[in-house]
Length: 242
Image (cartoon, rainbow, N blue to C red; front, side, top):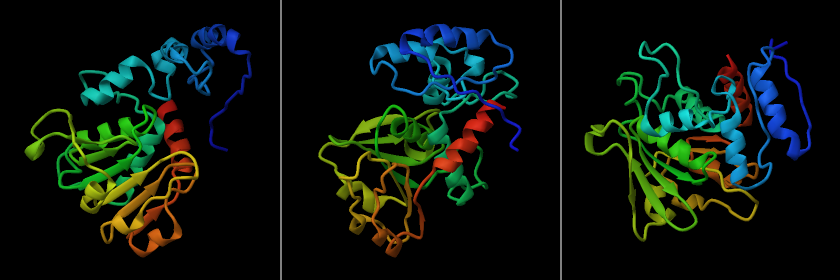
């Protein structure tokens, strides 16, 4: 047994606000997860902010999101309580730490310095938060969307306290992938297949889409291939609950 208990509550969406408020007041509830989209509109953002910040285990409240993008890592001046981070981006960070991509000789917060990373996804749920986290840890991150490529970086010598974003005009996968030590892809649907011929020899490749973005030929070029991150995401969710 994991020691964690959960209750699945299925309610009509018109009743969800009342149930969230009730869970906020229930001392037996330590964390609240809502399966989105509910309304598939800005009303979902309202629901995210309705959850008590102390019970937000997904890191979706404004306070947590603000801290993540501003590179504020703790909630208190004593630096005893870490700010909650979204589960899937943090799971990928933990995978990179396990794979020794993070250089533990460097100071905390700078341990990706010298690494270039391409992320093929810029969703507000995973891709953009992940780019921010990795750039704030010192990496040069290329964030690839269907329309453009953006560079997330803390500048030359990572002297800035948080990342800046630069539009890389006319850049595509063909420009950034060959420069990247790590390539992370999470394009939804089965139509997209990553062009593995662009990969740098020995790159680390991570797939976080429910569909496999990388074909089997990725193993011929990648030094390490991680086909899914779901199990680590669940562990991170439980970690956020503690």
